[in-house]
Amino acid sequence: MGSFSITHWLILLVVVVVIFGTSKLKNAGKDLGSAVKGFKDAVKEDDKPVKVIGENAEGKTVVAEVKEIKNDKADA
Image (tube, rainbow, N blue to C red; front, side, top):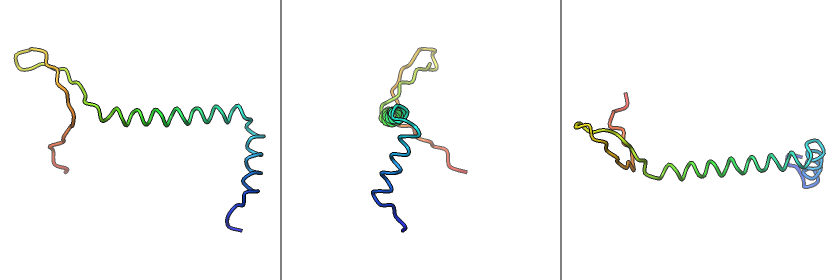
C-alpha cells in the first residue's frame, strides 16, 4: 500500500491532462527545457576568461583576461 502501481500513475496522468490540457503541459515542458538550457549555458560561461578593462597608473587603457579570481582576504 506504500507505493503506487502503474495503474495509479496512469489515472493520475489522465487527470492531469484533463485538468491542464495538452497545450499547457507542452508549454510547461518547453519552459522547463529552456530553463535547463539557460542554466547549462551559464555554467559553461563561468569557465570562460573574463576581459577586464581599466587604466594603469599612467592613465593608459589596459585590457586583461582574468581566468581565475582568488580571494586573498582571510575569513573573519
